[in-house]
Length: 233
Length: 233
Image 1 (spheres, each protein chain N blue to C red):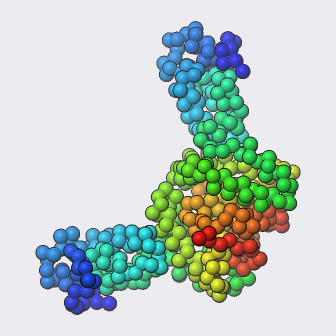
Image 2: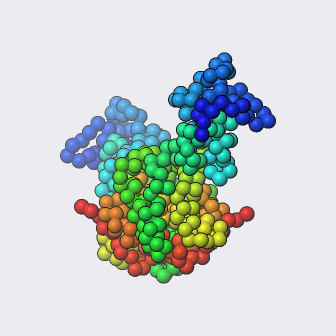
Image 3: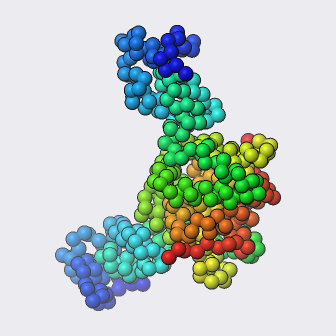
């Protein structure tokens, strides 16, 4: 991943101002940097994150590529890879996610499918009872007030959390989607009731008591007998 | 409820400016109306609603009286009764509730305790799939962004919805509170997933499919075998 790679221009059929290789721009054609997007420049990073937010919100996580984000930001895809690594990590940086579910979920899945409900609720509460809460609350507040951020939070839940949890169950896609969405409805509801609205006794109850009460609901949604809803097309 | 009743002053032991009978003030002592709070004046109504919001948010629904709201607004309690009727109705007006659960819940309860879960989810979706949705969304947005409105929405859920539903089950208070709060967590989660974040297939599924999927969860929370959480005092 050559931040300083000196390849030729990598633009698509429609080259745009500032769309060339940033390393090339920096060293060969300083006059072509009207926005000052140097590698290492905080402005470059911010431009990539802006472009990423717009792309993920408009097209969703799956249909967005690092290349498309780079083009929109007017930088080289290699630079985006260099700064952010994978598309998952670019997405987490774009929404300022307080935690990376990819690093937390393996321990959730360890307990096995028959304890998945409890494990998911336990992890949710561990994250929200910890130092990530203010950032989590900020994300929820922003999502509720703004259609665009709502789409980003939905993409986060679907692509970073639910798909990873439900993906371990080896289900047909429509069933995986439905079980994931039902799970989401209960998890979001716990966050809202405990941390936002502070409905008692959920607001002050020990986490393990909530795990015991809500875990079976999530377990039913994930693996139990449920009349699954489907999209109305 | 004499809006024009000419009784003596009704202040408590600590009379305050503007705290007398408003009818008396209007007709007998115009010089004592610095804020122009005449009965029938939109400013009077707004002052009562402001005072009500403050009182309900600070002290909660149960600990707030019409008399205290009237005192804070500088009007006679009889005027508040005249404008708004009961404390429930004053509260609904103060939070601009799009519906009055008191008029909707009787049909929910008709189905009997063993169908309560389904009935509650069905009513929730009927209200939110109908013309009240924009006002409901505004209330949720406001509650998530603002600690004060969050308390008002919590008081709404607890005093106007959950207590009425759970109240039919004749449970000890702590159990009623816990079952009501768990129910709230699932209902709020459905609202968030279907209407705010629009997670598919919950966003577009027919209401009855959600009733079939989520109703059993609510039924378990209301009447089933649940390890109930308790307040940590």
